[in-house]
Image (spheres, helix red, strand yellow):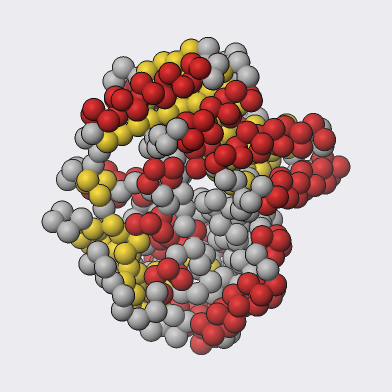
Length: 462
C-alpha cells in the first residue's frame, strides 16, 4: 500500500478526480491484453498537463515507487502490467492533437491521442498517417511509440518508428528531454528519439510526439484471393514479393480463422476456403491498376480458386473491418487466447506456416494463423484454457518451438508486439549476452533506481 500522505501529494499534482486507490480501479489497471497474471498497483494517476506529468514522475522516483505508463492497455506482451503496490500513470488524460502542419506534413500530439482519431483528423486534410495497429480504434500514440507498433500497412509503409520525427519525454528526475525536430533532417545530438521508440516505458515517459505525415494515396484497390491449399496461399505471398510488387497490405488467414471471423462478423468470407489472401494496392491510379492486374494473374497462376475485387470503398472497408476483427473473433472460442508474433524474412513465410502446422499437431493444440504475411509477420493464435494445467504446459512448449523456428529462419521474436514480460526470457536467444549487458547499462544510467517499468525487456538483469 502507498501511504495516505503520499497519495495526497499525488492528488495535489493531478487533482482528486485523477488519482484512484479504489480496489475496483486498481484491478482494472492490473493487466493488459497479454496472457500474463494480473498484478495490482497501489495507485493510478492521470495527469492532464505536461507539468503534472513531469511532477508525478519525479515524485515516484523520489519515493522509490515503481512506475508503469499505460495508454489503452492493448499491449500484447505484458508491457503495461504494473508492479505490486506501484504507480500506474495513465496517459489518456493527455489526448490533444496539438498541431497538424499541412505545409510541412507533420503532426504534434500528446501521448493519449487515439491512433484512429489522429488518422481521421489528418485524412480530412488530405494527409496520411500510415501506421495502423489492429487495435487502432482504441490504442494510443504513446503506446504505439513505446512498443514500436506495426499494423496491416507495414509491408509498404513501415512501422511506427518510421514516422517518429521527435519526442519530448520526462526522465526519472522530472526533467523534460527533447529530441528530434519538425524538420525533415535533424542530426543534432544523440539520437534519443530512436532510443525511446520501442523502449516500452523503461527509459522515460512521453509528453509530446512529432509524427511525419505523407500525402494521402490517390487511388486504392482491394481484392480477396481464395485458395484450397494452405501451402499455395503462403507460396503466393512469397511470389508476389519476388515479383517486386509492393502492396499496401497483404494479409493471410487460414481456414480456422476465416470461419471464426465469418461467424463473428458475417462479412461474406468463404467458409470452405483453406486459406485466403487480402490484398490492397494504393498510389497513382494507373500504377495501382497495373499492379492489381499482375497480382490477380499471379494469384490465378498459383492456384487461387476465386478472386473478388472490392467494387467500392464500402465493400473494401467491410472486408478490412472483418480482418481487424480476427483477434476478437478467435477470442470468443476458448477461455484463453495466446496471440503470438512470429516474424520471418518474407521468402520464408511458406516455411513458417508449415512449421506452425507441425507444432499444432505435435502438441495437439488448436492454432489459428493469420497476419501481415507480406512483411513476414504472422500471428499464430493458440486457443486454450489456462486452467487446464496439462494443456497449458503444451502451450508453453509450442510457444518455445514457434520462436525457435522463427529464429532458425533468420526471423525475430517480435515484429510489432514488443518484448515486455512475455518475451524477455527469450531475448538473449535472438541477440547476445553482450546485447543484454549493453542494454542493462543504458537502463541503469537512465534509471538508476530502476523505477521505470521494472522487469520489462531485460527483466531481472536490469
